[in-house]
Structures are given as structure tokens and as C-alpha cells.
Image (cartoon, rainbow, N blue to C red):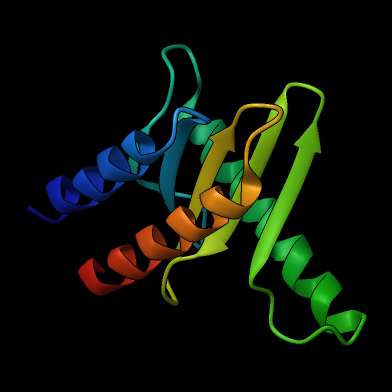
Length: 120
């Protein structure tokens, strides 16, 4: 039941923008709770990388006196990876195309993260 609700949130998120290619909900220890990833993309690798990046981002924000971590954004020549907290126990990871309208994606991701935190 909970997994269906989480996947429903991801489906709605992915449908809000043609720029969003994939999304996943990951526990803070790196386990996939729900995902809409392209075929051939390893869920375990996405979970582990997201947990590692979030941990590093959290430590960096703390060490450099930037407060509590809210988001991690990685830009590559083939697109973006956006990670944001979804409650205390989960992270929402989104893969977006290069040239995406990030402002709209940030807004949609924030709404989805709030919905996820209510489900979890």
C-alpha cells in the first residue's frame, strides 16, 4: 500500500515536466523505497550514490557553516541530478535533462518531497 502511494507520487512528479527523466525515493541509508528509473539503470547503485552524496553534502554544509542541508545539485554535460530531503527518513532523487528549467523542477520536487514525507 505505502509502496503504491510512493510510486504514485513519483508518477505524478515525472508527468509534470518532460525534462524529468527519472526519479527515486531512497532511505537515508541508501535503500530504494520506490523508483521510476530507465531500464538498465541499477537501483542499488542509484541508492548508494544518493546516500553517499547526501552524507557528503550534509557534512560540507555543516563544516562550512551553511546550516542544515536542503538540496544537492549535480550538473553534468548530460543533465542534472537533484537530491532533496523528503522527511527525516528519505531522499528524493531526480534526474533531469540538460537545459532543463530548474526553477520549475525545484518547485515540483519540493511538492513531491512534501507528499512523500506525509506518506512515510
